[in-house]
Length: 172
Image (cartoon, rainbow, N blue to C red; front, side):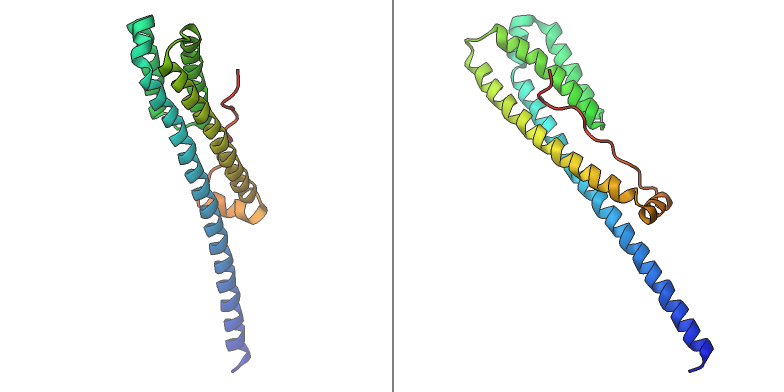
């Protein structure tokens, strides 16, 4: 083998190694992105669970406060369905919970409300855990994506940043 053939093989080998390295970075970005999306789905599922719990109390609210307040609850729940921003969904869910807590404090004798409070507290705890896991995944993804070479590859393949969920379920 001559010098030219060896040079071609070396250049081809280097190009292949570079291509494999870039492919590895792309796979790592895809892995982190998938983890973030999975954790968002978990967070979203918990938010949906709390919305379902609130629907169980609608008749009670209707009896006490009338149809107007039920419409308020339904509007908030409808707004949650189309919104993909975790912070805005959490904010709206907390507003809904605060209203329902107000109702619960005005009627202490109802067993359904006691059950509701237990379910809501359990869901809020689950939401906080899901939010923490989501934020961890977002941080890992954004940190990796912001490194020098991965950021270049992320720009080429249009990987965007994810935002942290900053609202906690136990805020007042």
